[in-house]
Image (cartoon, rainbow, N blue to C red; front, top):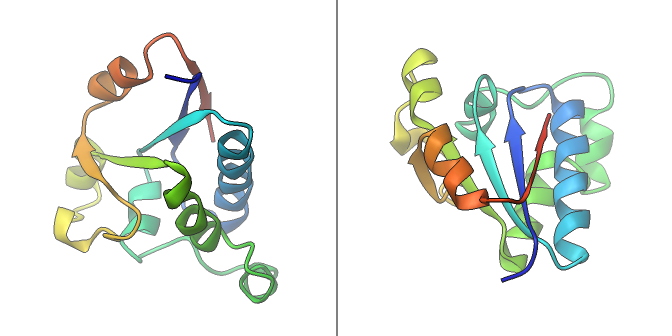
Length: 124
């Protein structure tokens, strides 16, 4: 098993998600194993209720560097995405609303940290 990197997402801001997705894709390209824990408002983006807008979002989509495209392209490289079960309850998001192309599981921060083990954890 290679080095593991855990990413905690907490925002549905498209520019912040873009930076996180770029970081994820780069770590995967460098041979790292990456697991995202989607907490806070990021669950809204994964349910299609956020993660868009702003003056540059359409340009990002045109260039295919928007967060969703980057994460989707990262899945075949081994990216795993876990949605926070508590955030889903807070924001009233059903697990059925989550983007099935991206989200692999719904779980807890505890389980996420166990999976990352001694790996690095970065928050966005």
